[in-house]
Length: 300
Image 1 (spheres, rainbow, N blue to C red):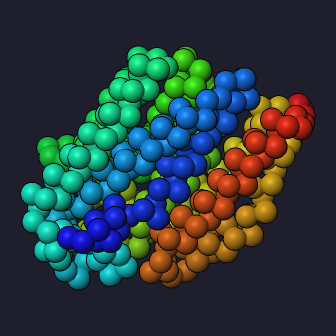
Image 2 (tube, helix red, strand yellow):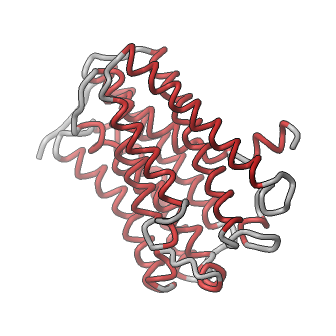
């Protein structure tokens, strides 16, 4: 594979979610008076390597399990070297191992300069990443995909980003990042709703396959609304700054997207959801950054 193919095989457009999760945890740490820019950049680099490793390993096992092959829905909108035989499966697996090794290298360094506790977070994350797609568990094939990515991107990564900055665990970064985690789960749910027919035909029991199209589309709308509701609740409780209301600028787009899912699910369902997720997350993070300069909270 050439360099371009190698890079694109990691699905770099998905790294915006990792950027959001790491930055959320770091911003909460900054609000507590702890911020080291070098640690932030190293944590971000390590988590991007982790995300890339997860994507590559997922492709390896999807081809091995006969889920991804030429003509599969996922091959119609992105580069998939494993499915098209552009590289042997052994090379794909080896690439994922290298990426996991980079994750561990970053993690061990952070453990040395910050706290050994980060090893627990990294261990849990890698376990979830591997079990998501690897034999014999294959969480994604047993309706656990959305829950797994929510835990990793909505809980573990923000908590880890906070821990390496402060040296201790806290509930605040996790609570603040839950809306971001819901959006990550929504991206996967959108993908799985679109692929219900195909996934069912290859015996992959995603959450969408188990629930069926109608209930899956309803769940999509509930989770989407839940992300906004949690921000509003956080503002009213005084946990989030008033500035966080800026995320509601994306609400019209969210309503339009939810409406599409009640009709015919678009072929680009997951990229549309990912684009909304990034816009929401950028505004959300900007509000937390602004609150560091101009604190403004209310409590009802």
